[in-house]
Image (cartoon, rainbow, N blue to C red):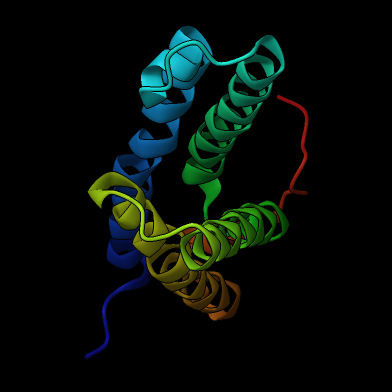
Length: 151
């Protein structure tokens, strides 16, 4: 089945916007509420600081995904970096499951997103970027923009 590039790009953009709500909301709530968001009452000051820092990274990942979406077929380097970071985080979560025990349902779902959904989105992105590069459509007729262009 040959899906038109413009339709497939729009579908990926929609999926990325929906999926990005996970790191955006979890990151925001982790920054705002700290350990209380994770049901960890009375965490030491250093643990609170570290959890909020990591939540800020999660929030930043979600914001970067939003930045990628309008030109998803051109943001190859940033998209690859984000997916690599999320995948490494998933491997770390998997290691925790091996060392400490199986996490709750929410963290198990996060593990699935990090180790299965994120790589699938990366390969879908690669497919669209390649199709856009080969295409004579308006999607690729504009001069490719560097990943870190000025606003």
